[in-house]
Image (cartoon, rainbow, N blue to C red; front, side, top):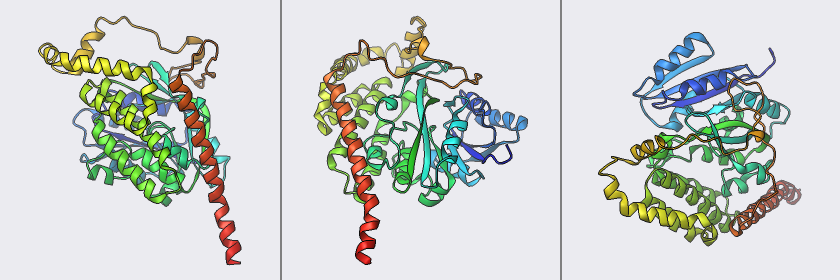
Amino acid sequence: MDSAPLVSVIIPAYNAEAFIAQTLDSVLAQTYQTFEIIVVDDGSRDRTAEIVRSYAERDDRIRLVQQANAGVATARNLAIQHSHGKYIAPIDADDIWYPRKLEKQVQCLESADASVGLSYAWTVYINAKGTIVARYPVERLGNPEGDVLTTLVFSNFLGHASNPLIRRSCIDHVGGYSPGLLAQGAQGCEDWDLYLRIAEHYEFRVVSEYLIGYRHHDNSMSTNSMTMAKSYHLVMTEMQRRHPEIPVAVHNWGRSGFYNYLLGVSYAGGDYRTALHWLLQGAIADPILLLRPGVYRTLILSSLKLVAQPVMTLVWKDHRTWVQFKRQFKRQSKPSLASDEIASNEIASNEILVMPSERRRGLVWKPYDILCSRRWQAVMRLNQELARQKQSEPRIKSGVNG
């Protein structure tokens, strides 16, 4: 449609030859076709630029911009500078979108007023082959909408950088992604930082459908959890300074949850010593982590693997080599989600990826799950109360001034 607003898809890419074609294919397969794609090659040393050029030769909506390696925040900001759309749609160079992602989110923002600055959707996790292996559980946590600042401090419920559709006017107002984190030796929370700054001034809306595939693969296991933690601390320290009304307990609960995530990242990457560090830090921030049964399994296995590591390195040079060795003997398994819960996981399909609500039958609620659910609901209620207070402030001030 001629009246359809232009969406600027921005893709930072660094050594992304393995997945960049799949990412571009998923964008080109969108039912909403009024878009441009700006790929910023962030100093790649592989075939990333060559692959993107081959796509640009076939579709003039795709543009390649190259820069010396400067980090993901600078790459995204450069893409935004070269873009012209009413909406900005970030996607990382190894993730995918399902076909109606842009259509649904554009409809969401076009039907809302200018106070709504960002639309997000639900996410599934995919492996290197694109198979769905899990889903991000935000739909069971209340689907935060409206003023979401306090909830967003507690948890990055968007999950990752490939999720939102953002009004360009919001980015013009609050500024883009922060290169200052990398300059301080921190990286990994640039997207969360931007969402928080947007949430200070604008409302969020959710599209309650699974529309994004967030990829976990061998390269993602090499994430440096220490730089991620430093990034998180810098962002949240600034939020505490600007918003003292958000209770310290919310920050502690959120920090424990983030350390729990870093625990998983470190363990999956074979960094067992660091995994134990994050287990301890998570328990200090919020002792209810010790009610999680998996913590003790991780504690035991990490300790055993640390003891065995000197021997294992004589056979396998690193953790990735060990993982590849194991896969040779691992029987191919189906996705962990039941087949009748998935309408489609093929990029070429025009169907929306639909997953019904969790089945309650046979579900066992552990104490940790119950407490986490109660914490989430408490934060949601607190968010609503603080939002009401913020809305009443102008009226109070105008009454005093009058």
